[in-house]
Length: 478
Ligand SMILES: Cc1ncc(COP(=O)(O)O)c(C=O)c1O
Image (cartoon, rainbow, N blue to C red; front, side):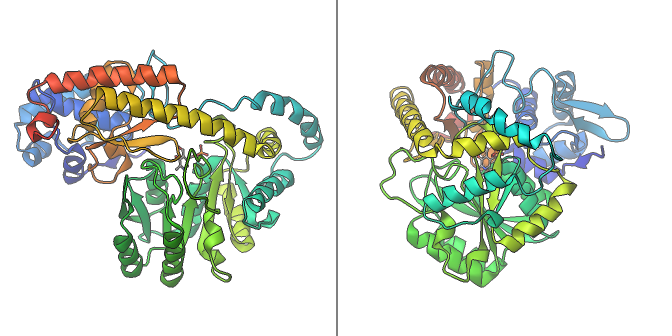
């Protein structure tokens, strides 16, 4: 595999304020680069800048950078390749995103335990499965029963949909990747929210897009004037949006903003990729919304493509998602699909076909689980972290907590030492910003939430005790 080069400026911006944390500076540099590798902001097989260049850019001694690089090598985070310098590796023992084993509690994924109905639905699906065993197992668009069931579910929610408007994918992630590949050319602009779901940024960038961010703030929502201006000035080819229970802020768009955004997209020639994977996880939102595509006026439907999945409602292990779009685009996507995968496993599709019929009941259970999780997290934050600001979300799987100071990476590292894997705020951004935020998942069972908050408490005490920590340097922690 060829190694990507990480430029000195890019690394400096990813490092942000790396000097906080106390202890020797080489250790702080090692720690920050280690976190960037562990949480995927520096991908594996990336060539780090040469020691001398980085030392100049950070205005530190070459010896300091050498020591940090040595620690990275010894910890298995990089290897030295003759002629290529230090190239990143994901260390087997300490893998963050991939594996929650090793005694760690893993809060890096905002998910819920599997829906209890899966076992029964799997048994029942075995009869249907027999029929499929007679024929070829490939189905680029998805099996007809599931396409019908997805269409029926949209219709039940107020958005008339037919089978030929649905393509089944291998989770929402493969939907995002396929749409990016088909709709984007190299150098095209893609409007994205900031913060957002990081693997969507990655899929869009991999397809060659230049990302144009618009801010979403917990408690305030979308920067609507920036949204309008960026749409008009940059004519993005696509806009990737989460109008319902946005990940990670939990915000939802008003009806007016939905209509206005579609209108602007139509004028700019932008295709909106609307990710509704968490869109039905309502706890107590006061307003009911239709699926986003229902707000398109007749004739403008082609501007809205919807991405769905059962990953956040039934179970992410099923790997079943879908795209809802105009039939012409569905055919184009199905034709382009085989380059990356040849379809979604049949048995999982049959299971989901059965379970979609029970969606109202399944969502009722999820609502109570999320309500319990949200209320417990809010209570624990107010008792233990009075200086934090945890917004009370009306749905979705996470709270985007304001820490009051730019210490999220430091806190994530300290939490790791306490047995908790949690993703630092900047992972949800583009340029090393968002150090003042931490995403806390709400969907875990209460005992695990409490265990995680205990670990965060210990980690917070550690960084607060440290006189050199960024928090105190900024002096804005109450
Ligand atoms: C906003 C968003 N979209 C898509 C996905 C991926 O979903 P799936 O598991 O269906 O691939 C996730 C998973 O975390 C997500 O948060």
